[in-house]
Length: 122
Figure (tube, rainbow, N blue to C red):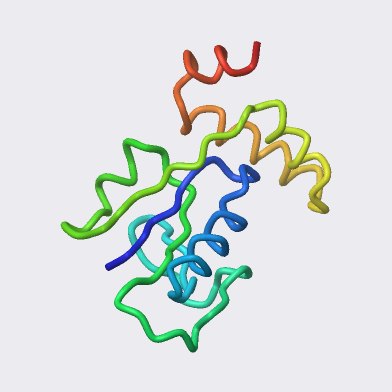
């Protein structure tokens, strides 16, 4: 069974994945992108030697999108973080400025909807 942990980028998804994998005693081994597992592409992957019927998979899909990729026995945890903290995290991440602008523009449209985002921002 997969434990899908998804949420807006820079919201603590990797931390949550590692925490859950350690607590359950299963591997954190993949990243779900556009419905496909990207294997060991996930930089936070760990515990690959842990034998388990479970595995943790990270994603950045919205709540609506992730349901399209769920299998019948998957469990989903959605990480939600205050947008101000997400922005602070993104600004402290060492990536090129053009990538930061792309991140902000793309994610503003795809996660949480404007109403929820605006309520959290205030």
